[in-house]
Image: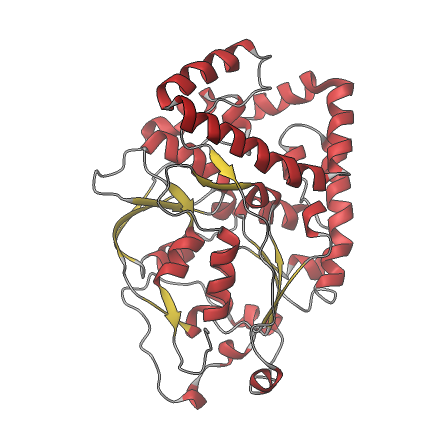
Length: 380
């Protein structure tokens, strides 16, 4: 992957860097047009069929300059739907019940490394015994990554829902009372898309535009910020400069573990599932959280067992040999696995193609299997 990144830097050239800089300043165009392109490709798939489209796509990929045209697979996503409207999840009167709250930073300091959970936490009937963790997260700033804003589910996936809608549903079940997007959300990007292509100037510009927007939306880091894609979250933590934001950023499983786990009861609704923990999540030491939460949703959980899927952003699409001939060649899942889950949309594409099983965001699984642990957590 490092060699490919160096190749990107070398081959991108002045024109490529100028294009990256323009795109970084015009991400709304990216959000508007990429879903349409993906839907057109999906439409041709329906018209031509998998075999014919695969043959044509392979010829085009080979004919295009190296590393410029992604290789199509049947698991390429469709275009994503527009972001749903966010709303106040509780009325003022309902919110008043939870106004004596300490800051979420105190919660984070009190959190302990999770251990695998064999069974759901018993539901407590006495509301007064609800732990303080329940009262922490009244409000969340949601930063949907540019990847999830444009990439929807694959054409053949039985789950055609919107990852954003599932995440909002999970937050509501967990007692979150208000969700807001960062300002000008459709123009925001963490810069990872550019950094992975060697466009450092565009990546830096993206971070510099996003950081003040995050500070403003989170009241200088007081309100936790939730990003739905683990690699983007890791890139943000590594590159933002304000320490208040570094403490305020969460990816989905870390957020659920820190704020919502005592407010939710999980039911094992899946028999056998696969899970891949992205490299970024491994670096953030989140593997025990994956094991703990997913273990409450399925009878059998099979981890991918590979250190990296080789996708490296979209590089695995442009250089398919990275995934095909890399660690994915060792992916061997049991035949009874029906669904796969991760927390990076592009990683999910590579895993789906190799395993011939639809991988999707783990948010889908958590939302499907979760219900409020308390009667006064409103879901209507």
